[in-house]
Length: 532
Image (cartoon, rainbow, N blue to C red):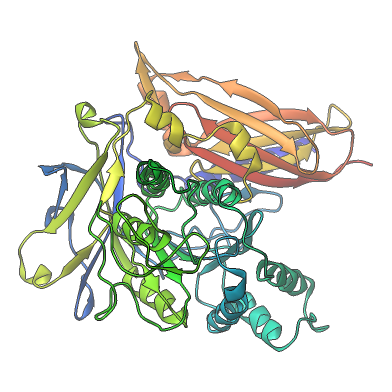
């Protein structure tokens, strides 16, 4: 038994470097690191081979020094790392690959009219059956809670196979393997129609779900695309004289979460004619902060011509969010597949840029971002696409507190966070019958270390629960390290060991970590076998 534990700990050590953050600097250089993904395309496709010196990034018109520069390609997965038996990771997929980009289709049933859902279901199935085994496209569904049917870092082939079978019959084929049968059931449930809920209920479900998605994608270092298939944007307020102001506050909060997670939003309203917001002849894209006149869907999901300067309608909001996050809005799309193909093709080759803004400029307001290219033959006629804004919150401000999750939120997440990389293994404690020992390795480069006298201090909480049971064991850690020790743990990881009494039963541990300084989080599920 002791030999087994030693071997699995050694396995954690060898894997730690493989899942360590690829873009984290060796030490913090400011209170905020702002990352943005930049797509550079010409009429010949992606513009490749650019360097850090080819980009000029401005924050509210002021040029920034780039601390981070990285190139990611959606088709490049790197060399798979085989996970030893019993070792779990929140950054490797089932093949031991760490994906650098993410594309997700989110089918929103609670913000889509019931009369549209049969039509949308057919569109979704047509899209999924067209996926190739080599495609990496996640499919999520939003009903009373968020459901991950297939994640963004897994092969799409099984999903396409199941979708094709569901097109033909609602009965699961006998020839399907157990995983395929489970996937068939998950997809069936995810596409089941449901009645549209009241505004407040939809807000209470939608906003936390998007926060959860943001945390789930926080460990992805490259482009993150979210195709949101929905009819309207959920807003709480009614027709009071303060509606425009209140609507804007809700939209700003939603935008802050998206931009903080560095997610490009692609809203898709599957209403029927195939016209995009950005296509010739369709309604123009709204400028930042402006309202777009014309026919829109109202909060019930039906057509309305009653736009006024006192309110924001759902489609106006979609345009504003798409523009601010570097995405694109699609209206009346009777086929979602072209939108998905356009998004994945555009994000095939991405430059990730990062800078530290001057702490004095962090005023808890939205800042405009601008990216231009140095003039050279390679950039001639190239077009740049990127998110346009970020919320310039500073640590220990109300705006920062609004964006940071609580441990309670993390324990409720359906999608596990990977902003802090975790590797873990569980073994029965050889000295305590009925107890399990959890060995955890944390990617320390994902934690924030702050200078205190001659030490660097981190602060994080770890909560361990057993799925299906109430309650969690939580402990606070506050390591104080010398500079050379910080460099060492960033390179190799930080080790934590906990022993818990499970009464000899079997189950699944759920481990959550929350960085108290930055709000970064990570989560991990690890099955364990008892002695009963």
